[in-house]
Length: 183
Image (cartoon, rainbow, N blue to C red; front, side, top):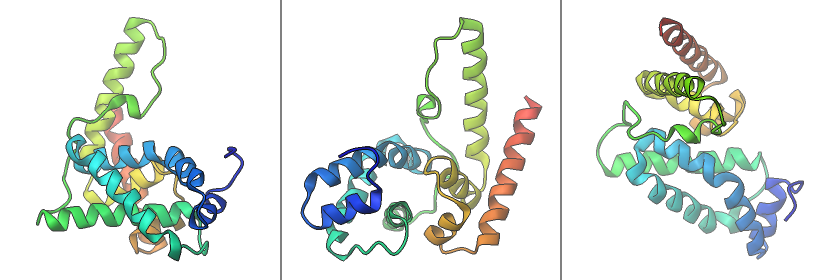
């Protein structure tokens, strides 16, 4: 499959029996989904949640209708898997990221050691600040930054209003900026 084929077209092709289309969708979205799960649930469970999300996508393929963007459809499913996981565990969403992978946020560059150390410290600080965000703000921020969803798409995925998501993102960014300016 070429990179110009839309996700919606790939999902329709997969629905119609083209398994290469599923592989292309999986390849396009796997990294962002696993990063989201790592930051919300931790490394230990991220791969399992990833597999569950794509198993649900497989199970839903015959019902798929391109009424919205595929990524909205996928991220609604991804979020549902996370919520179900925490319901089964009878606990709320975690308040921190555990064992976050800093290489997942930025590409490693060949920088001189002092600059690389400074960049690593800034990244560690940013991850720590993200971990302190309230769960709803963190979720909105990650859906925007990791999944690349728009405010409207995040509202659709979470079932919250556009204004609520806009406020969560504004407060999250404000808190992150203030925390980075302190350090």
